[in-house]
Image (cartoon, rainbow, N blue to C red; front, side):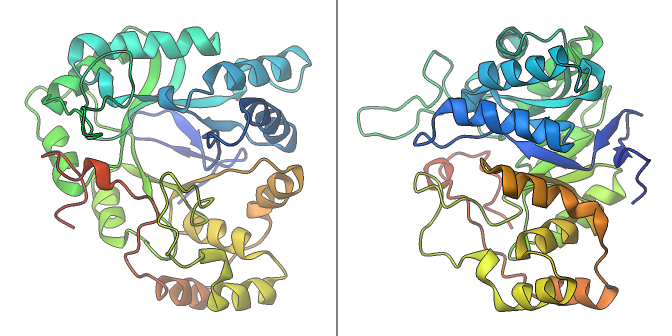
Length: 323
């Protein structure tokens, strides 16, 4: 994986993405103002890749943070790479641009650098982002994601986004898009849960063979949000093998876990509300793991998912059934 001087990687459409990104999902328990403050800190520290989403409900705060850092001369808009995501209630092709335009309005941006399908499971359109029936079950929608993709391509042609991609897609779903008759633009990347306990080696190899980048979320094993995370799962950053390697390099286990992804050619996302951790984890470019240590970390793989999407499992498009 080749980086330029700004630690960016060229995508298959010729645009560049910073290899390390700052995530902006905020659990309900954390005030949105903390997300705004953390985004400002991340930009001050040196992060230029900001990962957001319509459903996070934080785009106004993130937009304010970015504009404040533009106003004080820290960055220009073109220095920032912002990723937005298409919500699952907007998969019908006639709704795709509406979701994008709502994000642009909240962010006060003219364009997004990257716009991706958040998850390949379609939900009933409407104001509720998680529509439920009287039994508390999600109400699904049936949408051909190839038509959704055509609407994404139209957003790129309209100049509202520079690049388009996907998230949480498995190989079969990626092939469905890649083999679509009349495909205009390939997805530039696939953002998935990826960490030493779920190293996605098969999906990574497939994506590389198709010139699609893999991007890792939950790269540190998640922040244990009870709404989404199985609390019985082991804590990645407490793994003794990771701890021993971290000690060897005089780095934190978190920094080793992030560097591991970078050396595999994976774009990696990181999230924190703490200035000290944000500063520490931007030191990812200051050291290199040996080939032997990379193989040792490969050996930690358990195919263990932290993100619990059990509510979506009954949907025919659910991506993790056939793994």
